[in-house]
Length: 155
Image (cartoon, rainbow, N blue to C red; front, side, top):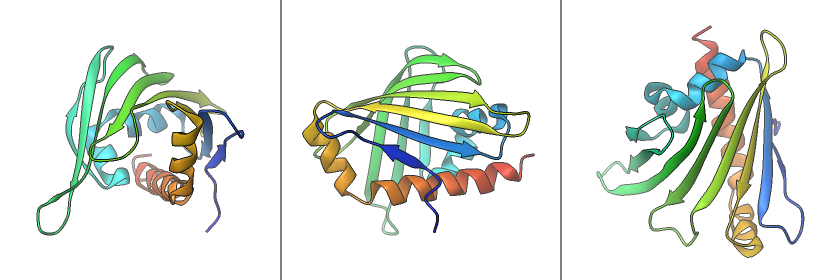
């Protein structure tokens, strides 16, 4: 499977830049990060809380078939500019990683295409490198592929 989502991570730095171009207008791409029903579909998780405003917050949960909590992520939204930008923290419960800071920038490329740039900052380069050793790149690429497929149906 082609890796359409690109990750740039310089050695020794505590950040990474994730970019992906979509065959979606910027308003639909942004909607995929703004509407709980769409997030649940492409992320494959339940949205328990989503307050799309400055100082709002969010909570995502996934349970295994037996009902046990398998994944939980939460954070605070620090900036929310429709169709342009989301700045938020992201923290996974029961994970060995500290909270990270994410800057999501949404850019129109044409009337029918757009680009997402995620600047993700970790507490240290060591933590960032631990994340990169996971199947992180494949996972985010697969999620973005699902996002493209699901939101295409909204066109």
